[in-house]
Image (cartoon, rainbow, N blue to C red; front, side, top):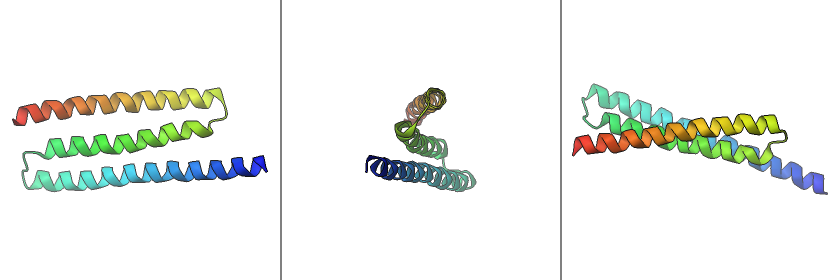
Length: 107
């Protein structure tokens, strides 16, 4: 019975990871498309729009990685996930810094 519950939990977590990763990819693709249109129409806020979209997509991808830590079985997998989370977290911080800088430049 316990193994059955564990299997169900693992499937639910894997679907959650897939959902979060897919949402991140969809947001990134939408933002890219919107930014390309903004470049063609010479929108002055295109950099800010792109940075905000990338930051939001990274948040979803980061959420998927955090959720993945729930089903990790080995220390080596956990170390790799920790490195991925650290890199994505650093990227998110840099993008948020760029957003603040861009907003300050626009004002």
